[in-house]
Image (cartoon, rainbow, N blue to C red; front, side, top):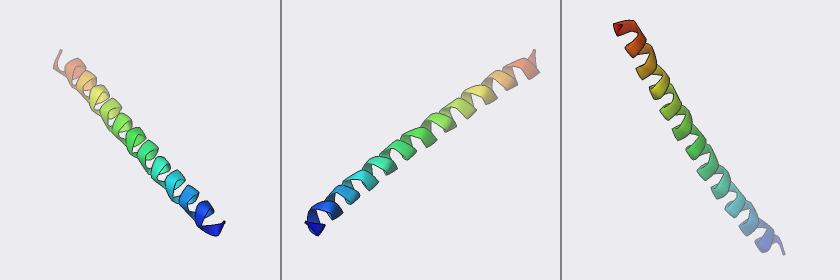
Length: 44
């Protein structure tokens, strides 16, 4: 039984890492898009 619980924990940890990685990528993309918009406003 402990082994099954451990496997579930590992699987949940992997899912958390994948979700946080996606969130970081999304945040970086959002920041880049906002930066591009700000630069465009500064140029005009």
